[in-house]
Image 1: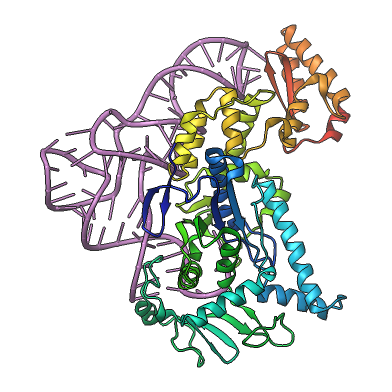
Image 2: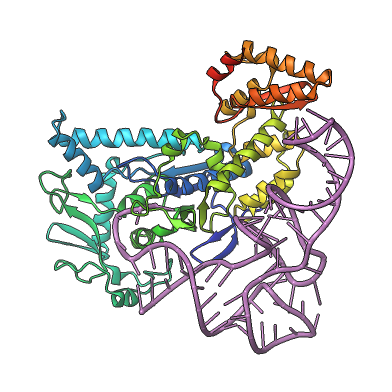
Length: 466
RNA sequence: GGCGAGUUGGCGGAGUGGUUACGCAGCGGAUUGCAAAUCCGUGUACAGGAGUUCGAUUCUCCUACUCGCCUCCA
């Protein structure tokens, strides 16, 4: 089935035709590793992970290369390292910077794994590509698209006539907007930094322009070239990166003589209860915060996939609750079931249509268990057999296989059943009321009475009932 | 100020030039000692105005409103 993707570059959906079906190549802008990933950071990760899975499903698992970088050259990382040094931490500033990056990367991978994201094929770090960046800058200068000035290297925006095409802006309009940094060493206010000088307390590398560090944009161009070649298939990221980051990447790579990405994909932003997530509004939280609050990663993933990636996604408490209910039903339906070999067509049809994940989830509402399981696997949901919170709930509802409170619950449920069998409903209801006061919820299924713990479950109260 | 996206039933959220998803909630029913769960049934909504058309929620233009980006931020 042909995949259609919305290409920001041409502002419409296009049939996706890989340059090489045996090696489909995708680059996604990764995080700056200075702190825990917030919920908004998880959106592109989940979106492009889903695309990665779809591409693997379509072209074969070994025929897709997915590169996502780590930006580990950044002033916020430096600031943390410097603060630690001043607080008396051992090691050089370089060590402390590396330490901060390393721990942040470990957190990131842990949190993203929790929401079901596979690791990309390659995860290059900016600090490993300094030489390639310098080479590319030198090439741009040699070709007249960049220049050195006062320890900086700058991209000459006026030398690239297509500048602004991706984001639909013109250089003149932007200057009219007057929100550009004016600097004496710039030929034109729109020119952006490829390389900048470092002071002694900042990390730096030797370069033809003196000791310094790369600007933000050049790393993606250099890494993509090295790992994916001069032309590749898909470049993704949040739509806040469209300008200037992606515009600048295009300018750099194109002027260096490379084809760069054919398809540009941008996900919309995340909101929380209808508002932008921000520290000042007090609605800012990380993926780890949610996980620690007991929100399972697959619930986060479900909520993310329930809105199309090109629409703003509103994270709400209500959606979180509904997602968990839905997933519980699906896990219940697929527990112990063998997945179908083929993913149901209705699900694939939605996904290949510009990653209509909501449509896919909708189609999954009416599937047979084995088909549902196959679809869930394609979308990156774990198997029911591997989900701890789900297993725990099942265990609690099975009299034969209860955890530590089994001895307490079993006789109580037996007694309740006995009273009901005897039609002594007044006594049965009274007992039910007491048991439920302990935070258990009673129900009657085909196999007999069940007890499921609620959030208020208190084993101590249960012990007291005996 | 510049650029862009969006506005669908009570809510969430797809999609389509004519037959109008899906989920939640609601309502009716089955079942149930009562519940829960489950099952069946049930809802013609597409911001406003103008235009194109035999016909527009779907295309074009205008208006209103919302949101995002332009500044470290996915």
